[in-house]
Image (cartoon, rainbow, N blue to C red; front, side, top):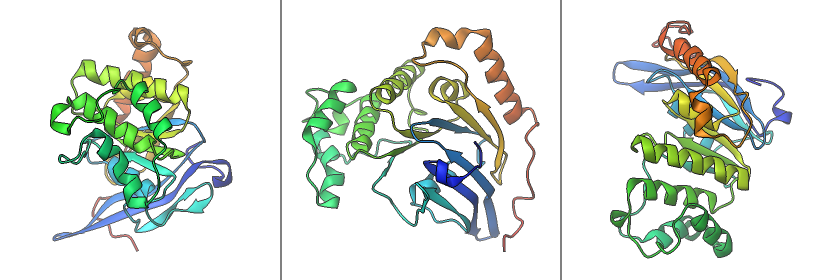
Amino acid sequence: MSAGDPRTAKLSVRDATKVYQTASGGLLALDGCSLDVRANEVVSIVGPSGCGKTTLLWSMSGLHGLTRGEILLDGQRITGPHPDIGIVFQEANLLPWRNLDANINFPFEIKGTTPDRAWINHLLHRVGLDGFGGKFPRELSGGMQQRAAIVRALSLKPSVLLMDEPFGALDSFTRDEMNRLVEEIWLDAPTTIVFITHSIEEAIFLSDRVIVLSPRPGRVAKEYVVPFARPRSFEIMATKEVFDLTNAIKLDIVGGRVARSRPVTEPVH
């Protein structure tokens, strides 16, 4: 389902092309990128460093405009930040002068709406942050801060959750714990998730499909369906099937099987 009928997709990317203007000229970051994500599907996007993964995700969120192409949510074009799209960044981005409860309430204050405390309390319990509402970010571990960021994003009940390498700075054990947590939250309340990661294993554990982007300029180069049933145990990650899938994706990224579409500095008209 890299690119099908946008009317059957929750989130559609159509011919996404992005040129950044730099002192030395135009930099082509994305080049005709197209893909669809179904409702309640988890899709991970991987690719070589600098291939435009984050640019693509931020375009999906409405935070970055495109040079050409469009992003559609339920068939409607996204022209800016959208209330049905939540995002979790690489850093938790909690306001240091606000405690956890006040950080979670902040988006509601901006929107002028009342938080659904029952839902927020459910999420806090789900991520193991009961009783931490009065704590400030400096009093929380990195993993706890990212849990709080997930609660903040989900507290608005978005239909799409975008996650930009949210666990990249965590140690391996905490990262595994967070991956299991994301799956448990998804099983508890399915939502559409697009997940950016450098970890192929993380992508396989979390996703229904893995999309591989080419080297910059980014375009959809390959797509893999992850065939393993949910819930997934970490034991499955040691199987030959996962090893073979991981190796195939890795060869696509680092083994030279994914080619550039055209020179990175070629202008787009």
